[in-house]
Amino acid sequence: MPIDPDAVGNTSEPSEFTWSSSDSLLYALGVGAGVTDPTGFELEFTTENTKDVQQLALPTQVVVMGGGKMPKFGDYNLAALLHGEQEIELHQTLPAEGSAIGIGMVAAIYDKGKAALVRLETTVTDASGSPLWTSRSGLFISGEGGWGGDRGPASDWALPEREADTVVGYDTRTDQALLYRLNGDRNPLHSDPSFAAMAGFDKPILHGLCTFGFTGRALLHGRCGGDTSRFGSMGGRFKSPVIPGERLDVHMWDVNGRTLFQTRVGDRVVFDAGVFTTR
Image 1: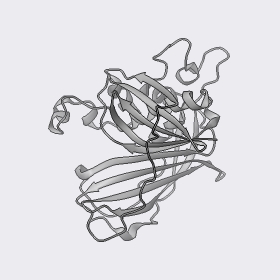
Image 2: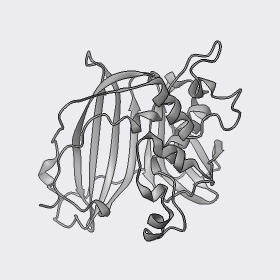
Image 3: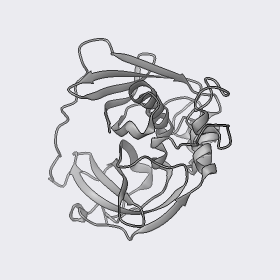
């Protein structure tokens, strides 16, 4: 059975999950927190026992929480799947430890001709039903398009015709992927040189969601002054892979009350069509 266009609206069973102080520390280190100055910058994300510093969680940590099981939308070849889009929206400040309930839903399925674009949405609440966050992802599945369905809305994102208002950049470590994979994504594409070579890469590449996390840190500091309670939403499209050790520069433009952004390695765009909002 191929992709089922009628699966839109399908939901998963509710899934309870928890995260700990240690989980939050590991995630923060996995997306580069503390590297700039291990004793004076981002201690709230990298330590739990520093005097007069309360531990906090980076907002982008929600992408590795695993909240909500994947709802059914047909069968497909896993090798044909590409994680093309990611968006998160925080309804409350993410605590450093806690528990929650997630429900996944098939939000849309679009016919892109040679591929299908499946949009998934996970809604996460606390035990009382109060919303914590919403995560949205777009999966491109090659070979599953062409049934004559809706192609989906066109993007209205456009690169501003001026230099960025703010640029915040961080160097990734050469072992960044080996550290980030401890958050749960053990795909050998990010660790096994022989597997990466079979995929056409000279060496293992960085996880796309690690690039997303570095980008979120840049937005947190560049647009929220490091205040996690002001972090509202961020999303965009993965454009090209990153090699561990490369520098990520996030270019930000203030446009009509929101921030448009691109993440680049030199002149190469690696995360595109970014939109960020504050709370």
